[in-house]
Length: 209
Image (cartoon, rainbow, N blue to C red; front, side, top):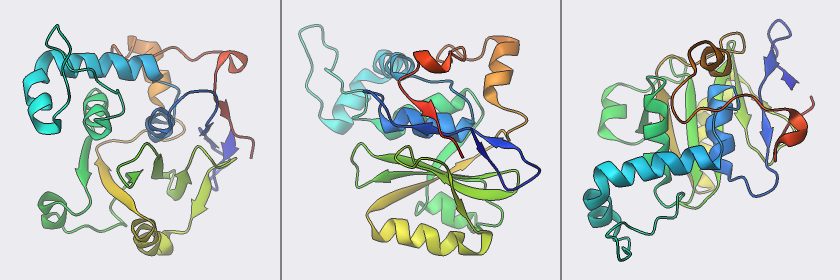
């Protein structure tokens, strides 16, 4: 675990390992707890397929098999998966340049988190405020990278220049003292959450500061 710059609080960070996809690491660091794995994301994709199969097939032109269900790549509709997963935590995902976002007059001093996708590919990272400080939680980094408050707008611009698509995440985000992992243990969490596992049994590892 890495330490934040405020009061010695611990930051939850996952490093990419094994076959675990970066979108899983992205949502876990956003929520500051090991709540999702690939099977959990696949379960959400199946539920999306069950409820919105025809709409998704029409929108993305995905091929279907003999049963009529599309042969989904669970990371082929990643934004929709993240939106659906975050509904359980009362969070909303909005593209940075959407009319809804700009009508709300984006002020990064008032924002709390962003998730970023590299050129519509399978690379994801999370940039969020924890205990008053901004960090980027890239699973390729050995530890979260601190982003000074004054630099956040320029940092977002630099990500876009390098081909990242930015999505604002709005809703009550957990800090290091109020993690979804703790809430999940109290109420069993949403269907796609998982119990915290022993470090030795995980594909990914928490970074050492």
